Amino acid sequence: MVKLSKLHLQAWIYIALIFSGFLTLSNSGGRVASTGLGNTGAPGDQFMGQNPIYCNNCHGGNAYIPQCNIAVLDSATNLPVSSYIPNTTYKIVTTVSPTLGTPIRYGFQLCATKGTTTTGINTWHSPSANAKITPTNGKTYVEHNLNSNTGVFNVYWKSPVSGTGKVNFYSCGVAANGNGNDNGDGAKNTSLSLAESTTGASEELKSFDKIIIKNTIVKDGINIEIKDLDVEHYNIYFVSIDGRSILKSPIKNFIPLNQIAKGVIFYYILDNTNKIVDRGKLLKIE
Image (cartoon, rainbow, N blue to C red; front, side, top):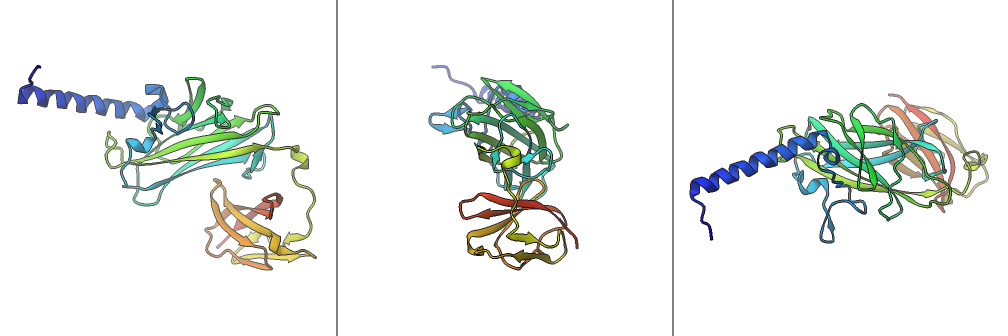
């Protein structure tokens, strides 16, 4: 057995630290691009035994406690969708947002698969300037492009052909302090499932005049006209422009929204089967 002197041992530790730092810095241009590894938790990503290896396995500090959100938006209306129509282009917005502190760098990975299989739905295009598209191991990932100072990443995606069934999106986001290693960072993984729509875009919402939003420019709240309807079977959901759920409320004549920040928000009215019966856009003012 070869014994290492204290000096040699220190030298090897120093080399290992340099190599570790090099790997961390190289990941600043995207982990898939630098290592070929996905860490979103998707089938076929990097695993250790039966356990997926996420971004937070390395960037696992609690400095920022980030949240990661995937929103699939209709590319024409910018409204979030709850199912996809085959052969249709959607805008995918991944948002990494801290709940504590102020990170100065952000990173992410995103991929889509056919259900829970390893088959990638790799129809990404036109990423935002802080993102890029990188293929590896039968899947194509969208990931950060160098050091992004924003946690919002956009890309367009074309849904698969009819009969594909459920599509799962997987993502992992990193909020980093930019010190060149993974100490003091934070990360969070998330996923989103979209079922295939059985109706076309023009048939998705039929005319629904039982619940009418009376004011689309909102200061304190919205006024709702209810026509001969058992409102106990309906709820209204308010969603931010980046797809985050803001508020859920039962249907009533007045719903206060004074706690919501100004800007564009979307609303969805769902019945008790979670079918969308109406949707639209509001402008919240102060």
